[in-house]
Image 1 (tube, rainbow, N blue to C red):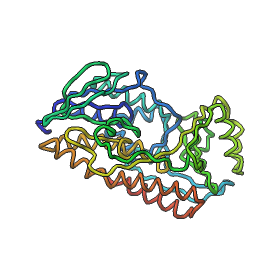
Image 2 (image 1 turned 135 degrees about the vertical axis):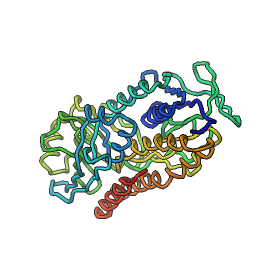
Image 3 (image 1 turned 120 degrees about the horizontal axis):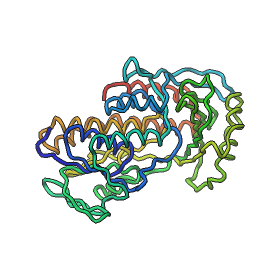
Image 4 (image 1 turned 180 degrees about the horizontal axis):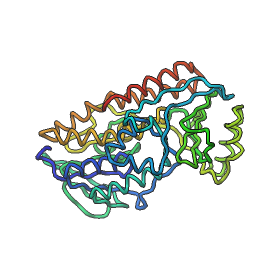
Length: 376
């Protein structure tokens, strides 16, 4: 552990921010976490979790809680729009022989699990607050918060997401988030007994998938090509989602289509991406998660690489003799893995938009799964 480090401020209470706070607290550091949302809410339906993400959750210490409230399964089944099997992508059991290769959980449930673990780790959580000013010095950062308090920290971690204010202040020339030309629809539906892992139906330009989030429920996801990033009235979401499923002849898809209604918790999100070149730190301020490598969900790895950031950052802080050495090593370990996820996910989206080569699509998914299975 570097002797230069005693306290840390984490800005942002999402998955990567909470994981960073937990892992830093394990080092014996005093950790403050500030989250601008006073309700500390997490929006959305389900989130797919790959084996590498389960491995990260095990390292953080919340894997048992995940399986108590979520769902695990092996493999990803790919089918045609009519329901004929194409292939099954293997999902290695990288979290341990006793842990399935993938799974899913409701996003608010995972947020609740991590929030409980954050408080249990002794992190001081301040809700309804964020930073208003940061002044860097050789030995730390003086931070003013929007609640009027000020404090000096040895390290500040910006984990405030795709539209990061920390990135905007510290790296004003960083790239802006870019709309990809696709949107994703999600809904929550009862789980048929024969859906035991992630399953996807590959249409010409629309992809439909389901993944169990518990014994009783699964979430449905649909990627759609939308040339412009325009507002869609939420009142229209259930009907529009049902319309997208109409061309899929697979009996299960048509059964699900008939069930979509106001009770299905339908939501829509435009897909955006952003990858910032190294370095991801300046002085005593470092960025993690979506603040530097926001990806589309095509590889179900966005949350996972954010959790891995937290683990690697803590590991490098523990072994380095200086903060600068630790932050440089953190970036070197994370760059190629995160670049691969962002760019490969983007390529999958491009293939879907163009109605391109499904063999290339499957190959990229398989190769990325195998790469992510490697140690971090």
